[in-house]
Image (cartoon, rainbow, N blue to C red; front, top):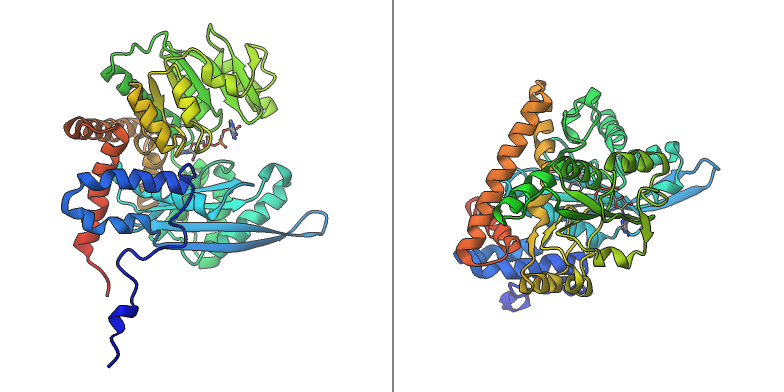
Length: 434
Ligand code: NAD
């Protein structure tokens, strides 16, 4: 008999996506995994599972445009790891979304859900589309076709999408309706971040920003940084950035600079966040706001500040920006905003980075509450939601902080130690099938 064992791949056989650029989202995630492996003991045996998304689906999304032409968009849903429960993670609409980016975002969801101990695995989705170029009807058609295409792997017990960049409660309503039509029953638990009327949860819209504020306030308390008068710069003024700005301003901090896709506004005395919010509501960007002066995109990073909150996209804190930042604390409201080399520079400069997997976990925590409420058809008050959110997120932060101090590692690696310990323990206990 032929010796077939030699034709099998080695245990760490190369994947097609193992050599990403170190500053790409997937490259950033892989470097973060490498850093945690020395701290997870015998579980390191299972670490390769973290580097391999369990399931990646690429779908074609054809729609008829309002002018009668046919347009095709590429869509993705990646379930990175389902060891601890169904997949959970948002859907992003952006012209630059790639499969590799969605892989990284889904992996960070695995880590985030485990870091705060939610009974979920990690997943993420996206469509390569600029939603600002579509009419409302076209956006609905894209959403419904995409939902049908990924319908073979999502479901209330399988994988539960939610909003992310450029998606919102209306898009979740169309997703829920499409899935429900296809299965022949109203399945509110298939997505979270829905309108309140359709089984959405109170507090969900502002939950991520709320969590950024609560974890940021706790980090500032631990670092003995007074919140009153703290100068804060925020990149991204959307679902996450705007509520965080309002909460920090209400606590006495000065929001000295904000940046979005349209421009950057600076005011050393602090911006009026309510007037700014009204401006963004009307014009869709912070650009043109007269309560401060317009500065260049790159000057944002040179503003004198105590805290910076990246709340837009990945890879924003580069090596060069990390060297120049005057902030002593980075609150990662966005997913993956700091590249690994910048992480090292910030650590060597004594800058504390509160990692995304805890800092922006408020959104998925309240999504979890929404999912639980949908199953029981019993809804909680906003006070109950916020109290439970605060309890879970501050408890998780304390655990991560203590783990980081115990091993003398960064908060990011501390969060990965806590999370990967849970993920890989579940993997080991379940064993391999068959
Ligand atoms: P959003 O679409 O509501 O807002 C995104 C903001 O980023 C907008 O102000 C936009 O103008 C700005 N932006 C886009 N490109 C930019 C660029 N090149 N430079 C500067 N600003 C730019 O999205 P969101 O839901 O607020 O998500 C923001 C980040 O937070 C993302 O990384 C997302 O993954 C993460 N996040 C969101 C949630 C949530 O509940 N929405 C939860 C956890 C993490």
